[in-house]
Length: 310
Image (tube, rainbow, N blue to C red; front, side, top):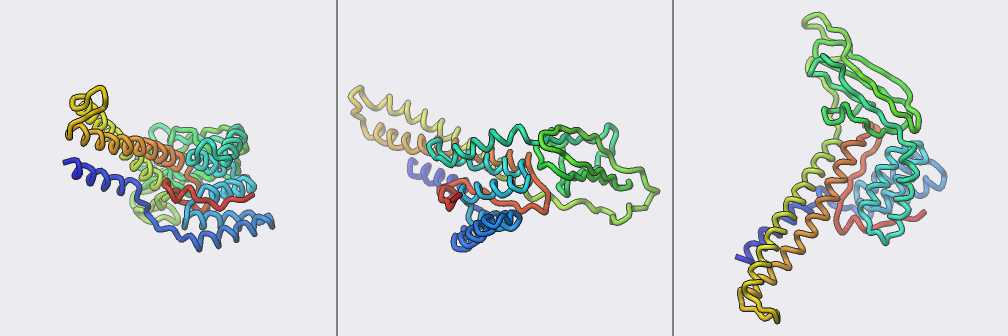
């Protein structure tokens, strides 16, 4: 029974920690070096493109720090803040890169613009709202979200209505709220110019990844709770089958062994699950426009390898 339980838990951990993509370290290293060369020439758009692609192929905190730095250099402070937070959440307190990232987080937070977008009361429930090409679903509406300063375009589409567009500039540290709604109603059977029946914006991949990562994190926390309960159960078995001098019968020895296994799995599952929930939350709340490359984040042993150098 003990061996069977271990096999089931090992399978669950494999699902929990499985990475959706294989690392391509050689290509990632070449892209990282190209990004560093571009950064030396202060070609920040090229640097960011290379760092993002390097991180997609082989995620690493060092690469993410370089992404944060080049995004910050371009004024994309919300994007930079997000990557600094990812780095700080991955690394141990003793790691100097975590100290550096935490300092950057504290420096950027007062500069972050926040934008709250809400649908007007009575607006068509089928309305689709996008900001800079990214769909904002119900969880994102009516919530002040950190965004990069600069031009913002809010578009509202609804079947049978003209497309509504609102453009404005958002400054650092500014907080703004916009209540939006689709344009005026169209005659029956008519569609808005440039629209086709059933047209809606492409889904936001970053937001979808955020929900998936968060869901896996919740599963990890649940696994931690279950194995924690097993640990307590095994402890009671040990108490019944071992004396004060820690001499145990065979049932007690088996319980000691199983309890250690369950305890380790519980601790790791809780830690990784919490990290994934935090990462998923950041991805959902700070999804940026489709033109910005999106880097993947993998939590696990390989994510602690880095090639960072300022």
